[in-house]
Image (cartoon, rainbow, N blue to C red):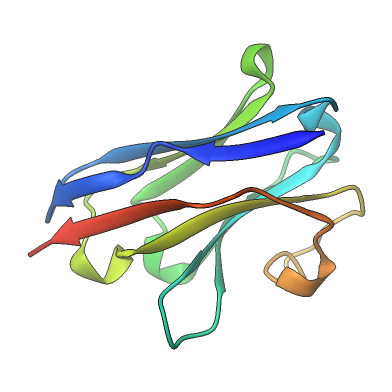
Length: 126
């Protein structure tokens, strides 16, 4: 069972990147998948989540309208399209998955996730 996050890189302020979380060995569409990010010295924060039940999505307030999460079922992956990137979006981004249902209250609780990808670095220059 493997999970891999990719698509990070260096981009200028206002640019776009698309991250992808691909899985092998299990059907990612049956899992809730959330993208987290972390900056050294700060706590990890939930960025966006796509649920495995009612197909709900959740976003960190600061990224609403700029980021969009979606499933690529053919690729067994979850993508995060990031637009209008800002320097404060610079971080290591991780995808995480869990089978349990998610709600607006707990989607960003990183302790509740069972599986984690290796992370991909996003750097937004000013």
